[in-house]
Amino acid sequence: MPQFTSPPKVLDYNIQVWEIVRQIPAGKVTSYGRIAAMISAPIAEKAKAYRAFGARWVGGAMAKCPDDVPWWRVINSQGKISARPSAPRQRELLETEGVVFDEKEKIDLKVFLWEEGKESDSSQPTLL
DNA sequence: GTTGTGACATCGC
DNA sequence: CGCGATGCCACAA
Image (cartoon, rainbow, N blue to C red; front, side):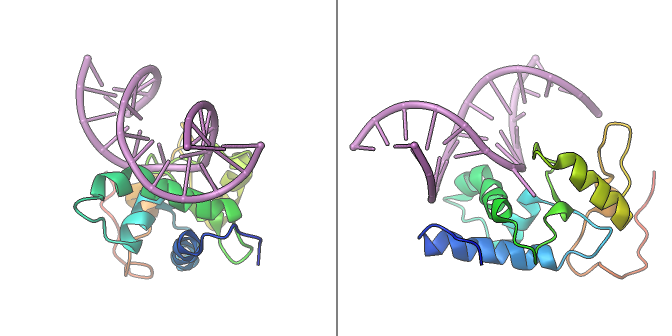
């Protein structure tokens, strides 16, 4: 267990993030905003604030990146890898999982985006 | 107590 | 579709 600062609330949030990330099947990816959205329902009042920083909280949680969490399956909404120093390393891991990148190093979220409850289904997304 | 930055997302051109 | 600019919360110095 890594050493976290005292804020238990944020830590609790991070734990939820890790829990979700662990549920991501191999060969699938998800975005920070997606995780943030599925964790705590965006409150109407703070919806903007949450939308603005909820994703960053997830990033903060990933910053701890415990060994039990496949942090490499977490990317941004652009379907690209974040500016992490080990970004190239992440791409290698994703390719090993079966994820493919386009010439712009972007991932087809229409194909590899992990959707809740659609992990092992034969539903083939409409490839255009 | 204040200032700066951060594994992002969204809007506009 | 790509790039630039903005917003917000929490933490570290």
